[in-house]
Length: 344
Image (cartoon, rainbow, N blue to C red; front, side, top):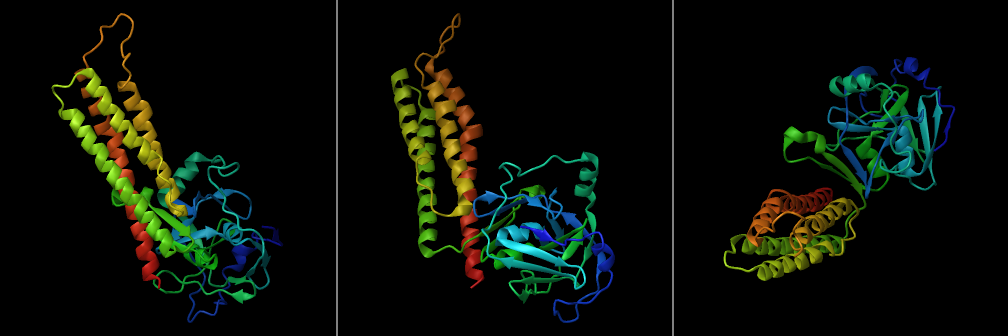
């Protein structure tokens, strides 16, 4: 996105001239407000995105009165829009027509080092002083925008550190995407909250996702039953122990090989399920299923000792994580379906 005549040095002074130019009823005057830094994950389709401001510096979204704000530069990238700033009219004009771009935080140039870690830590802890800016007009393809929050109440652009920030939900809707705030169940770990932007789900996609997750449940139950059978065995010989591990391996291989549904925001969770299955096979089953499990100078242990160590390792680690991962995938899909139904 090219930024023409972007003169934010004078913007800060101009913001104190309130005007309410977004055609809101009784728009508030421009004023300084306290905003928090939003450090949780934002995912657009299957991309965990990062944000850059008009100066080309990586930045974080802001949160003010329950609304998340993203920099105008990122909004333009998401819409495939060129942006022009007019200081005289305090208007940002975005014209679409380019290819939407979602900046992958894990891709090349997706993250940059923090210049002053101490200052950054202070900002994270205490938030920032931003400016509520109802006197800024945002025009997209010739139409002045009226931004509202999830409850339908008006919200306004925010400016901070020489950049304009726009409400993320409104930008998502301009991109014709569903918007889902997905809070982590344990609010003591709210840093794990995530906001998803995604294309509306068709009935076929929802059914595909539910079928995939139901099959995950079935195979996880099989793994659990097979694990419990191994755990309870007392009169097996080593060959029977090895055969039981082979059954466990086959079930884990089937779970790892399930075809993922065509639902972009589930891809990370599906990848997590597959990865945990591979870990179960490579780091646990194959290790303890190796008949040559002795080391030079060390007497071989009986299979029961290997069994006990194996059970302890997968119960306290991989199987528990796998169960949690599948349950979280269920919760995400259910939340998306409910979010989409409520929006109708």
